Amino acid sequence: DTEVTQTPKHLVMGMTNKKSLKCEQHMGHRAMYWYKQKAKKPPELMFVYSYEKLSINESVPSRFSPECPNSSLLNLHLHALQPEDSALYLCASSQGGTRLTDTQYFGPGTRLTVL
Amino acid sequence: AQSVTQPDIHITVSEGASLELRCNYSYGATPYLFWYVQSPGQGLQLLLKYFSGDTLVQGIKGFEAEFKRSQSSFNLRKPSVHWSDAAEYFCAVGGTGFQKLVFGTGTRLLVSP
Image (cartoon, rainbow over all chains, first blue to last red; front, side, top):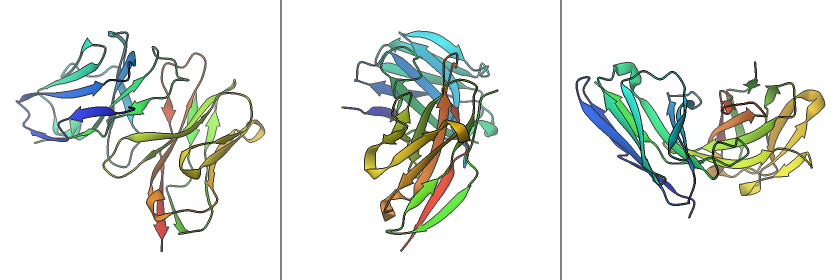
């Protein structure tokens, strides 16, 4: 099973709301990633967890707060977002740490709209 | 700095015709090179990757790519395109000392009947 699941598929939120995105994988992968993708653009890395520890934060604003409760689960907590944060949020996982030679498996994404 | 260029924003190919998508990279050492495909509203799927060895790499769905160090290129090819190949294609580069993959801006493939 090479599946990464993401919930919800779509999310609409106001600028004062708090919401969370969820990502799950059961492939035994030890690295998990959050990417943000704007329309007609490539994905931009936001965060990387390696062995459940945050290893990369690409200077993401604090209104985005990642959490890795266990090796299979990755959350992205959202608070006080701006309309420009509207995008497709992709989760990915890879087998061992953050070796770039490992294939990253992507989920289908959560389409976020901030009103 | 490391970079990836995909010079074609859009390409239209007739179904059954051959396809070549271009990718050029800038990196001083041997790169790790990847091609990903993204269907509308979906995540990315790895088509193939190159780290070392044979410069002609076979991937899934009948795709192949050739690493040419002299041209700093890693072009993606398919001999006969199917309508289901219509999607966005991203080339990406990594390497020793990279913290993350660097993605190109993508090429949108349209397949005409």
